[in-house]
Length: 305
Image (cartoon, rainbow, N blue to C red; front, side, top):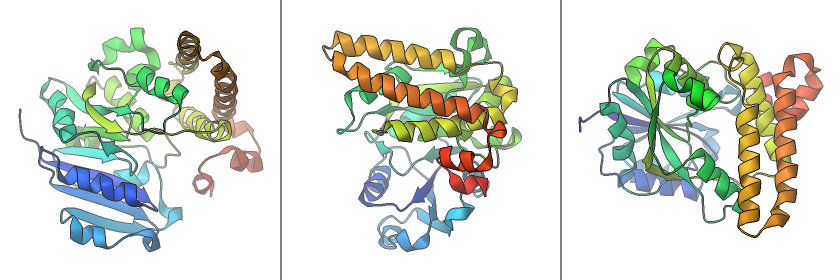
């Protein structure tokens, strides 16, 4: 396999012991990492000892109001001269020492300019969320191209900066992540990548441990911002609806809960699904809402300042 220069780029906010474990696991990776660049929000929450313990680790501090999902990551990309940019979040833990190796493998295939990892549930992951991980991150790898739009629809664009790698040259040629971006910067960029004729690889053998047990309220706020991001980039999302994929997930999750003898889980499933849809519905129509209501619905209030 060709050896690429790789930089890991991680935005962080109030990083704790789990972040130190992430750095430890990155240091043990079989594939060589050139450096780990971290943009940390609010310097007072940073442990300066990490920079001494992990020599390849570089940190830049910003204020909370300066952070932007797309803009901050794009700035990080501009600081790198590596062949491949690997973006991660502070709560994604490599499942083994081969994460970066497996993430690099798809780039040897013609036309593949991005790849993203499989997300495995944490030990504390709730039953229904575990199934969502399986739905979105199956065991089988695949490369998605423009030819898959008729079959996969909007899922063709799916990618996650929880752990995703991009060819730096193509990233810059296509303009990088949207700026500003309230959310969903990864999917917006890979949508452009697909439409430009390139491939996006789902690397199922590249594994990170990452999941959240969101409440119905949290799902509402998260999906409101998702709806906003799609409304602001209608050039991509107007043609490919998310609703159908969401309905398919709910149906399959309900069937799985019943099959596993847990029909009582249908109640939280219906509640959280309703919260998701309500947030998404309002987010898609954010420009018709009064400002006070937008600020109540959003997960990222600083975006609207």
